[in-house]
Amino acid sequence: MSRVQPARFEYGESRTLKVTEVDELGATLHLYSVGDTGANVEINVPPLAVSKPVTLTVSYDDGALIGAAGAAAGGALAIACDDLRDFAEPIELRVRYPDDLKPKAVAGYSIDEQGSLQVLDLVAHDKEASSVSFSTFRPVTFTWTYLN
Image: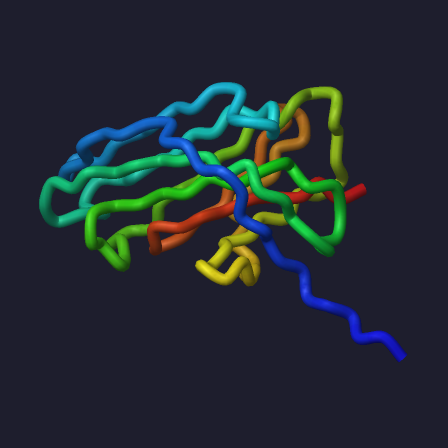
């Protein structure tokens, strides 16, 4: 009898996409045609999410999602924020996926250093706008799958 292995992310090559300063007023970062995903991603850091100015770095990793349900987006995005472990307010990760995909649902996952997955909180899925939003209180590496 074979054991079913849990879904995981295998890290690949990583490259920095954007570095910006974020202060108490918050910020919105826009990333277009991200890596192999074909998606546009918006990262919304709301006011008061940080108590002092920090450097936010967003990177793309071209690794692979293994064993997860649905069609993998392709790669992952990593959000690093100096030595910050938690945001005071949740940040929003909005993904605008290609219009031709038309998934019934989209599942988002945070990824730890070992590649283990944890489901992200779904905020909204607007099928008409081909977008989905997730939220998190932590700087995170994340990816998503399209479910039909």
